[in-house]
Length: 315
Image 1 (cartoon, rainbow, N blue to C red):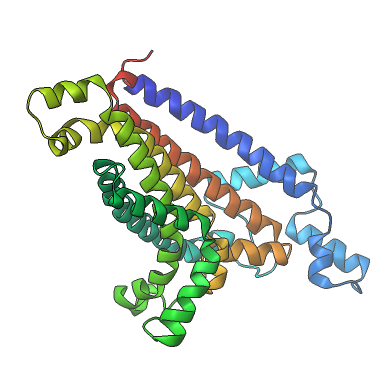
Image 2 (image 1 turned 60 degrees about the vertical axis):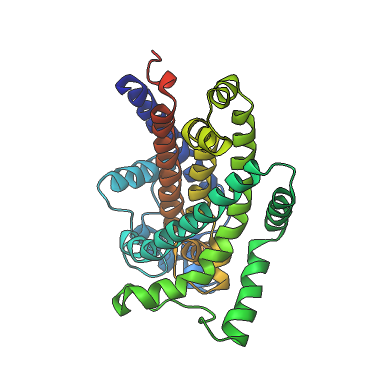
């Protein structure tokens, strides 16, 4: 188990290094000068040169890359070109919106998908199965931003149960904060729950066809008992992959939803930074999101080893 975890950690480190290179080089070739964007087209050359020097834009690409990487290792993500505040403070403020939103949406997705997938697998071919699969197909097909706007129209404008957007802050209490995140979390969760329910159903059906399940049934276990005691654990292996990928998507891919609901999260921060050509913010936030994705995949790999003992013995 320790060797397996060590190999995965080495792979994680290499992936982070490659990702940092790709992110830096991709933004390096983006046309435009942040200093010229900040000062406008009528700025004097000496003023532009002074601002470039202040922002650290005059160094070679290698010097800027090493300074960026070295700063991140020390917790210094640089200073925003636009807001002139430390990027780490901006990320910390926005993370307390994006992370709870992703966890909230993932919890809703799992709570919906697991019972739906298990119920569909237990009643394969029945009306219940057809209804659940039809609902999940609809959930996959509907764009989450359109569903988000529909919920704003129904629950915020017509029924007035929720606000149409914004975030009051955690200082106002957990209740108001979670209420503000409820509609965005539902908009993110339902499409993901549809995918997860379909994967759960397929994995369970594959597992229920194995010989050891038929042996368990021959020994007197009911279908429900065989499913709970034997099939469910083995069916979790592909499901864990989807859950890990979904959390990564919910954390890194909620840009549209955060803009629909005017949430001050990481996705909205990246959108604003791209619009303002605040490249140091874009680099740092994207790198942080890549780190989160890779760490989630590492956690999924460790969960694999816990669920499937065969992985622990690999050399």
